[in-house]
Length: 143
Image 1 (cartoon, one colour):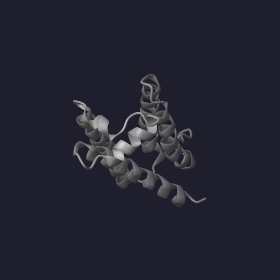
Image 2 (image 1 turned 30 degrees about the vertical axis):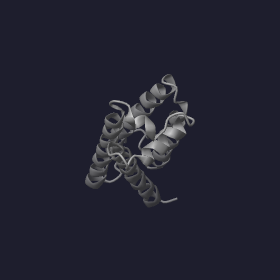
Image 3 (image 1 turned 120 degrees about the vertical axis):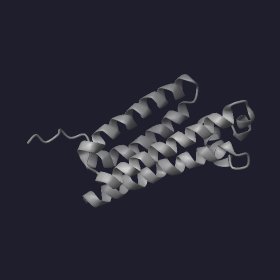
């Protein structure tokens, strides 16, 4: 497949990050929390649902995670718009994605939500395939 195809895949992934963040940010508003509630229900194996957002601080925590995720996605989109899929730049951003993956997945397992680690694996795979194809992890070319 062409470089343009893999660049489009990466660009789509960026918009997925932003959209996922929006889904969680919406949970800060009662009545707009169904998407985040469904996500929690799935990754908890059906033990946590939107009703959990009534717990003190939970609605705020979920909404803040959404805001941070949106900010992360918009930041990477700004990098994309500034330099495209330049491997030298994206190598560092790839490290950030992998740090998120390891920490979030380890904490998901440690707190009894291993299905979140599974969803993280799918999410990071959707990033890694184009990242590998675009050479983000290839040895830098020395002039």
